[in-house]
Length: 257
Image (cartoon, one colour):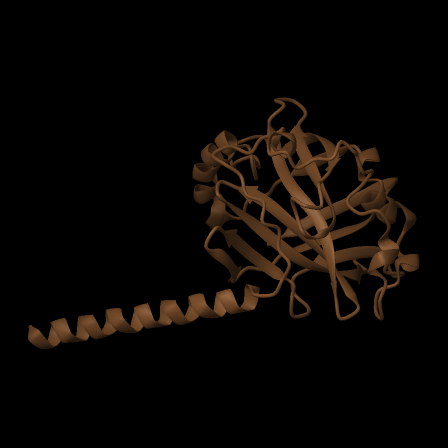
């Protein structure tokens, strides 16, 4: 019995040491990356940017002002299809719908989480047993420079056209390091935010001329997902990829995690 207790204590100590090492590594990886400090209270909702006193009163047209700011070796904005580029620079001109597909292993958790996200009105995607396609209304609001240290920050608020509830509220910005500009997205959560740093690349898909784009956390040192809390920021063991490509008379955007 005594040997068993010693073995259990040793196992617990090893797990704690491993957890501490992982936590330290996650904190180190997040250090030095200019992440948004903005967090929310118990509810986010469509009026969050104004309620939190973040806005200047200006209304940007899109997710970014000009894709040319992201030009570098390996990414030429002039190759990007005009409709794809317009989607980023004049996003508010595009009517949007969101279609959500839950993989089997996530359906139960998604069904439970949907109750919480609906109450918070953030990441408020349809659950696996609800209508899978939602028509969206979106708007942009310029964010004060003293509220968020990133560059050219704007809030993008997407609401369910049918219910008026917020589906997704995020703060989009950018920063430059070593001659390369990154897209950064901060999703305010109760007393935290989920931040994503993304690299802009060409995406071919079914297009031989590679006129679509991909924003990905899968390349470079800075890209990744980070949890920002009052106690500091942590890198998360998650990956994310957005692709936007021409599709008929419009564009098709796909997000995978």
